[in-house]
Image 1 (cartoon, rainbow, N blue to C red):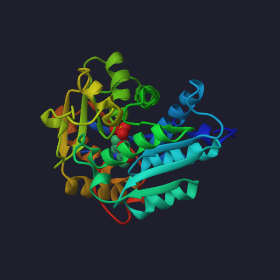
Image 2: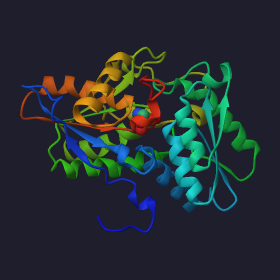
Image 3: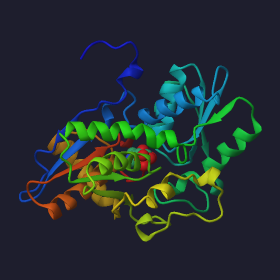
Length: 318
Ligand SMILES: Cc1ncc(COP(=O)(O)O)c(C=O)c1O
């Protein structure tokens, strides 16, 4: 690899690895895309750069602005990394109770982090995989309206999020020589699954697209809950709704936290892959799909982030 001019040029083009020990006999092969190779340790670097560049081009973001976002971890870290590097002040709103490692990561890159406490922070409703972020998104909405020179990245509804993952999808297709029978990914904002699904289904109409969500959510996508009453589009956003109504997603499956955590541990110990807990959920589900498809088929999935942000908790949240 040749020298690059900026660390931002290292975003994307992540490696894809075939699982060696975890793939079962008599099952399809499983390939994992190691997104923790992105500079700040997660695939959210891709969307942070795309959302910021687009906002600059559209004149919504410029010198002297503050970037704000509601995040439980990865998007906040990526916006802190990319935003600070490009000269912006970055302020992240988190619900109380996230791991201290995640706050330290954001602060290390230069962001100001505010933990919102109490009922308002967790909100009284939400979409599966993102329930805890409704309150912090409402805070961003109010701040953007009341404070000049503030830009809210809006990862849950910003089309630049999904667009960034068209590139991820093209990478998967190329790395797998165009031979993908199924693709599996956890859903938070929906940007990863939707962006990659768009590219794969266009090239391979028979590919099976499977979403994963944490079991026990109040509004499970797997049970058809993707319209959330009581909150405006500004807050709940549209990626999940658009994705679920696009016809591109074949199914969404709830994955239990214990299964995700156990698979995460196996990935680290048996494959030497130091990913986060949602990656464990993805691989747990990918193994089920691989069993169903059988030998000779190929399942791809995503390892969203690095394991270093889950030392103090092993919980599957997106
Ligand atoms: C660790 C982790 N896994 C999965 C996801 C889901 O990705 P997306 O928001 O693109 O649906 C996210 C993002 O929220 C995440 O941070």
